[in-house]
Amino acid sequence: MTPTTSGPSPFTLAASAEMLYRDRPFTERVARIAERGFQVEIWDWSAKDLGALSATGATFSSMTGYLTGDLTDPDGIEALLSSARASLEAAARIDCPRLNLHGTGLDDKGLPVRPIEVATPGMWLTAADTLRRVAELGEAAGRVFTLENLNLAVDHPGTPFARAADTLALVRAVDSPYLRMNLDLYHAQIGEGNLVELCRRALPYIGEIQVADVPGRCEPGTGEIHYPAVARALHTLGYTGVIGLEGWARDDSDAALDAFRAAFTPTTVLT
Image 1 (cartoon, one colour):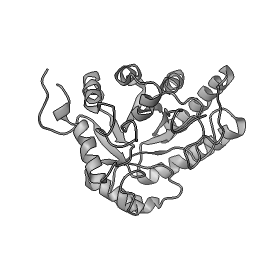
Image 2 (cartoon, rainbow, N blue to C red):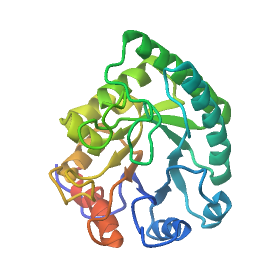
Image 3 (cartoon, rainbow, N blue to C red):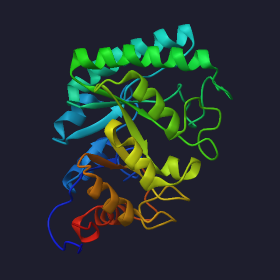
């Protein structure tokens, strides 16, 4: 095989407006990412002017799919389902196809509102049942919920169902096209490693892949992950979906997007 030298990325590339161009108002961040040719990802939609975001003309790839709640506590389940319904209404306003979930609600520091050190077998069964109900909401609205893996060692200690192996197991158990994985390779590198094999194993259940380098959670090329190799593997596996940069800019946001695009374009992908 030989590397290609021209053409667009074989993947759909997106970037988080929460983490780039942070010196600008949020709507300007969205517009700038769109101007650069990327789809846009946002987190908590409830504090944003959705009309203004829609007016930017940006294509939105992903947004937070709940505001409160969790997968296992009775009150938390009802809160999660209620806020998932509200999130679907918000997603319709900006035509966002994917809505992201975690194993439990997170506070403004990324820590679980209801930390759980060990999930019992009963919790696993309840979490799968809750996610089936979430998938039914997604099916009725024609949108997909994604369950994101997180890392416990650095960013999100105490979060249940956090590892990629956990999210994959739950998504497999539900087995609905309206519930997929948001496979975050930054988190997976910290928690599990073996990224190429992880992508291969999870491929049928992936709704989106998110990336950032380790350590530091900045753009590809700033840490230990050789993302061009990951890109080649994904291309070989036949993945053509969304890859989102959910990372900080080490220095300049334009340069971060350039590095991200370079890691996932044909100059680095074998055909």
